Image (cartoon, rainbow, N blue to C red):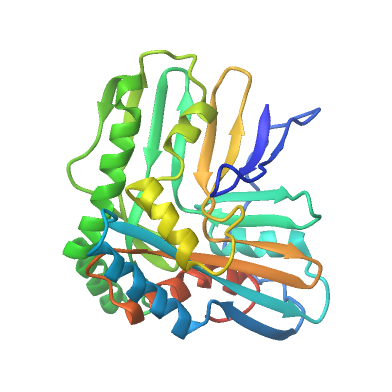
Length: 317
């Protein structure tokens, strides 16, 4: 079995392990309970800051008029410094208590840090000849008030901008994987799913491989990165990202999961995550930019997406 994480940029080193032993166990029970307090926060900063991020959005939108790029996903990082070392076990328990239904992951990194998070997005799950991919693109903030929450969900269902953005993802996945399939089912319209912090447009893609020996890891590498985390067309969007983003993403918007000796496995997109090294925590979030994007709205979206990890750290966005 191989387990671990692969970065956004496949040319960078991966963080993969072949364990001497592996053991399956049921997920620990979780539910709303008392969260473990984290140490006091000493300082925090956004990379880039609000003004620089919105300028990057403007740059990307302008670029769409002079290139073939139609979508680019731009990211931010939030650096946190706490008074004492973070208890990674406690942070993982807080994540599970607040997000019991997500794909939880925790990976030791080569530099001694720990990658952990709870992704809502399944890149691919394969068993035998069958596989499932469940991309997400297009989101709206969850609201504490039930009526406001329903209005936001309805707004997302009717948002032309978000459906346009989502369409790039499903079409690209189908194009990359169709030649490997004897059957491929791609719903015509996305559905709506939710996490504790966000509504998402979601499409569950299912298929049967013509050659069952193709492994889950091979499928994942064929799909990665999808337009949900990079853009469209992929390589042109990646060049634009390199030009406008001030920091490297590393494992963020890569993929994390496992593959066994029979080729079965599960890989999820590395989002709603952070890295922990002693008292320092670095959180990540991104937003899909298309021609209709508004810089202030996209800034608000990435701040909402940071809430998953911030709340586990005992903080507010």
